[in-house]
Length: 94
Image 1: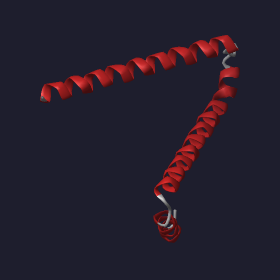
Image 2: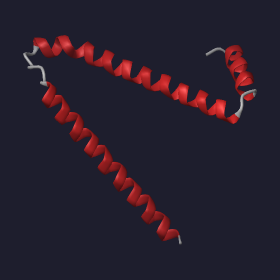
Image 3: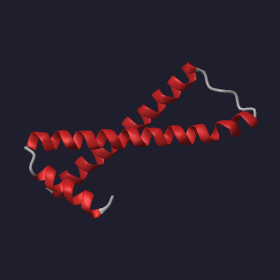
Image 4: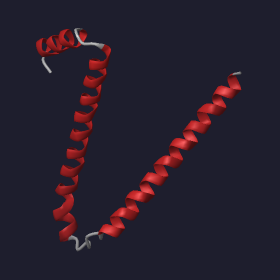
């Protein structure tokens, strides 16, 4: 982003109410997530021909759902473990 555009945005954001700034933050986070999802899709589509050439069978919707469920469970477990570790570290400081 060029410095002039950045300065214009900063000036406009400074004129907003706190609630409007929160909306801007939400929108920027939405755009970042949208961009990340698009990049992931592009990476997936880029390897599709190689998977096809290698004879890899496509996953069924049920297999995809199971993979997503397992990944989410793993992420929740990691977050819970890191939360527990943070709480323990805080308790050690008391």
